[in-house]
Image 1: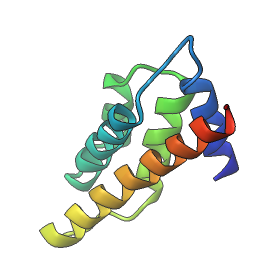
Image 2: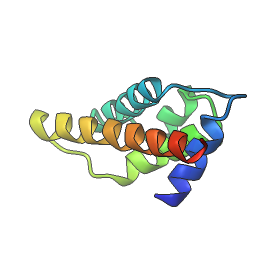
Image 3: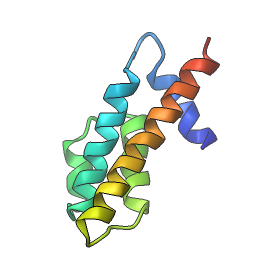
Image 4: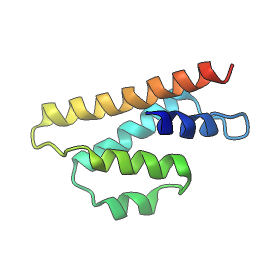
Length: 95
């Protein structure tokens, strides 16, 4: 979690400035394609390659892929929430 917060601190710095809502939405999108079975190399190919997005994709693919829609949706929601909370914590630490 500390590494995630460090990445978020860099991503939410004034030079990069990404909103927590946007970050959470991106995380949900990444987990959605992961839950739908897209190969990691294809997910990486369409992402802007920076430290944060590489970590986001890597962490998503380290989590299990589910077969039922309810578990897929729960996984997507939880992953978005994880990144949203980490972003909020990062913003609070930088103040």
